[in-house]
Image (cartoon, rainbow, N blue to C red; front, side):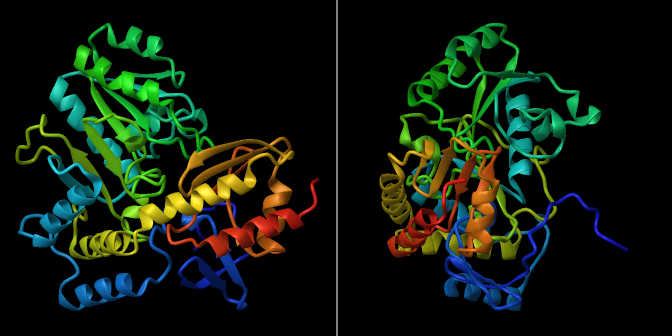
Length: 375
């Protein structure tokens, strides 16, 4: 039997990771500025993370949500403290797409409506409801398309109000920073106008922080660069540092009832151990602050370069858009300089490293970038 061939693969087989580095099966060391697609938040194989999961699996790895798991409450408490959303409640699941699906369901249950407003270039996942609100026709199968969704231009508040005026919109969903699109941040004024507009017309405001959350932007959540307080916040990726974990933060206006939401694996003992370890490391090592410091350093050194069309993002979520296509640049970074980066479209390099990236490691990237001739 072979694998279902849906991923274009680099000819690299990672076998070891430590901090911001990985090693392949040939012993080559790579600087990881991609973090496995923004997943590695506290670094590869962090000792505290490894210890937490190892000790937990020695005790119990899994039981269903039909029994009490005190670690879930511990995680909710710690997450509330670090995010500043202590009055919210937490629903645990397994992925960003699942988090968004459950947020949409909560909004629909709460309002009794079915329509959703999303935004151009947004990405919210590949499950049925999540893919329907994602602005990418290539991944929407006929089965996924049976939803009431309006995809509107980002930052066009008048277009949003026109949709909301019909009083049939359950939710407006928006990324704190659009990741797949190439690190595009909604205007602060737009986000701050969305919140009262949703309240006025009875729609739920969902902030998708799957990629931009957990300190990556230099704040705990991307939307916290503004004065917005959403109704629901979705998260995953950096939450488990590689262990599959997702969650929805739920404002007090929602009322829980037995059977409203559910999941088999969500909030299991190992997921909670991984998530608690991540939060403990983020707090102890001040990684949110480090993301801002190192991100500001990178942006300051990249600004003004003639070959760069636009710099976007904040913290360690950075898009570097070039005038020319960057496939060759990215290949040279990877195979000649041993540096992993991400990509968006054909012209944008995406930097999504672990949040413990150092200034010296950032400077190594900048030096390597300068050594690659312009194509």
